Amino acid sequence: MFIRPHTLSLITTHRCTAACDHCCFGCTPDIPMSRSIPVERMRGLIDEAATMPSMKVVVFTGGECFLFGRDLVELVGRATDRGLATRCVTNGYWARTRKAARKRLGELREAGLGELNLSTGSFHARYVPAERIVHAAAVAVELGLGTLVNAEVYAESDFDIDAITEHEELAGHIRSGRLRVQRNVWMTNDWGEQPISHDERASRFREENKTGCDTVLNVLTVTPDQDLVACCGLTQELIPELHLGSVADRSLTEVVERTPDDFLKIWIHVEGPERVLEFVKRHVPDYELPTDSVHPCQTCLHLHRDETARRVLREHYRSEEDRVTDLYLAGIASQAVRNRTLPAFSTAEN
View 1 (cartoon, rainbow, N blue to C red):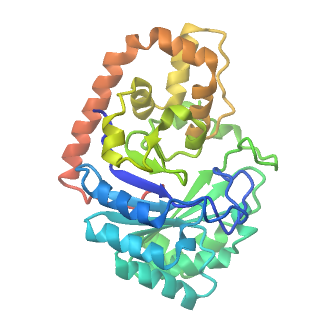
View 2: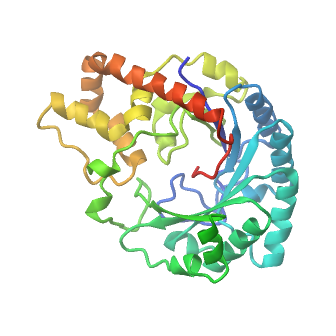
View 3: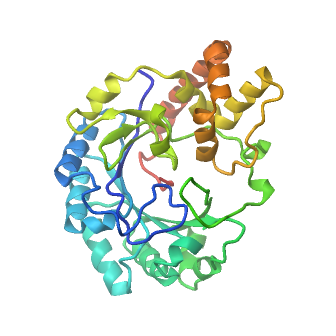
């Protein structure tokens, strides 16, 4: 079995307080809370994750996980009690003041929350002012949480990132390493309306941008429909091949153990979807690579949808099977060594 997940990501709901254009899951305030994982099922999923030897972290995301209020606090506490680290991903809508931020985060910190990831940028700021991100980040650092601000990036963005990075209080936290600010490419999707563009240097096919995928096989995601997905990527709900089965009435372990090993997932994990498509082009020289792709999830979606790529991989993947599998197994061995010397949990993007 090649799936050795270290993170369970719960997309708690598709409801959100914002309606950002090009949102990866199309989340809006109009989506009812019924489009959520039932709280009782989330309790069970946490219990099941705790029985998996490789599992280290539970992530609560969405949509907007803070809409669960006290239930979120209870779920974080449950994961903590079972020896799992926890992370919440949020747009920070609840941090209207420092006092409000301390109340919400104080309860979560007391329950054991270890990390807070805040999402912001031009699209987010239309619904959640940047000052709330400042409140949330400052209080999170004050409470000792691992704190990360993810700011969306695209050419037309007018977001003032300096309001965060040069804020007199936050700048010191950034210099000390207690706060990280990360700029992430905001990619288009099938339902976004506003045209956005990117500098050509963002192309995933530039040599310096090609990487393996750290999430596929390492992260198990449960969607609001209770599908288990072998990835937490932005396009995972559009790629049926990443869906392993329903956990509505089956356990995580049962679904994972019934999942056959998939060489393409291993290959994407080791070398990334761009190098897989370059393999396709070696067999079909006039194949047109999607060089306008600016995010690995965008390339991965193209890879899974493109019939030529699928055909070439079916016909020729065996020539790469031993090499890629050896690289994957070597990576597992290397990670096992690192796990003996490094903390099991560190700040990272969901």
